[in-house]
Length: 189
Image (cartoon, rainbow, N blue to C red):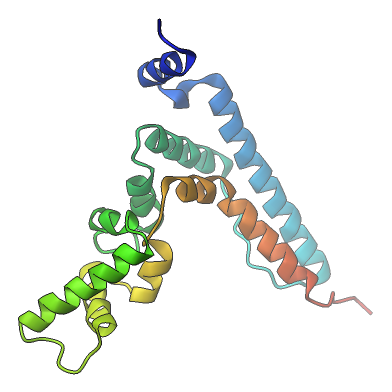
């Protein structure tokens, strides 16, 4: 006898979840909520002379992005997809960054030590620290600073990708609202 969990898994393997009506409706609904909130915040900022940085997403483009992300997540490729989709314009080789996304902080520190050993064995590095050598490697390989790489890539898991995908725009709007709340409204005299 097949359990409910196994049946659900078999069902999900056969169905393109992005084609389900409820999934389409949820993606479209979230995209529209994001657009409406960004629009409302822009109106508030304009009315009171606030300086806020908020992007108003195109609902159809956002819906398609959500669906692509969901598809990648259901196929187990969420991290790979996110690095390419979100950071492909910034990372020189996002597909190579995936292995570092799977590393926790301890494994990352071990990687830095391995790079240091490698470069020193080749006669590079001189008096530079292991972190300096790792910084050089990350910059040459991915075209970004090691600090950015650590914040955006290292120890990135599927749950964080899904959270950023679903809540990223809403968080941006929240931050812009908080920023506006710290400003003094400009009034017409």
